[in-house]
Image (cartoon, rainbow, N blue to C red; front, side, top):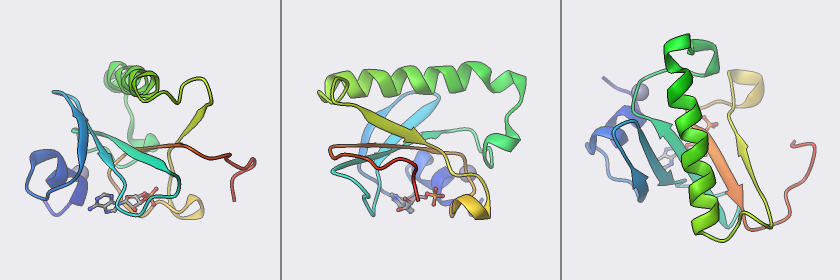
Amino acid sequence: MSCIFCKIASGEIPAKTVYQDDRLVVIEDINPAAPLHLLLIPRKHLINVLDLQEVDDQLIGHLFRVAAGIARERGIAEDGFRIVTNTNSAAGQSVFHIHFHMLAGRDLQWPPG
Ligand code: AMP
Ligand code: ZN
């Protein structure tokens, strides 16, 4: 498997892991776009949201609840944060293993570029 996020999830490629469980890994983005920039990565190799099936519903719900827990732990819940997932080329998806960016620590523009 040549997928970089599968390799990070398995430990084959090192990453700054801030949380992990049997379904997810959460790492620091190597090229942060905000003071806090985490990637929430399901261990399951799905390409993007277009690849999700009903069987994945609990996984994605779990991912968002983990994100909310991290936000509370890190004291960013009240100020606010953004979770975004890019899908295919117009959105700039560059890694084709589903992941959710969690951004915080500065005022985030809306709409995003
Ligand atoms: P996207 O462009 O939405 O597919 O997001 C991919 C993200 O993965 C980018 O923000 C990259 O900076 C990040 N990234 C790529 N390789 C690594 C890596 N080895 N460790 C941590 N983050 C990475
Ligand atoms: Zn993968």
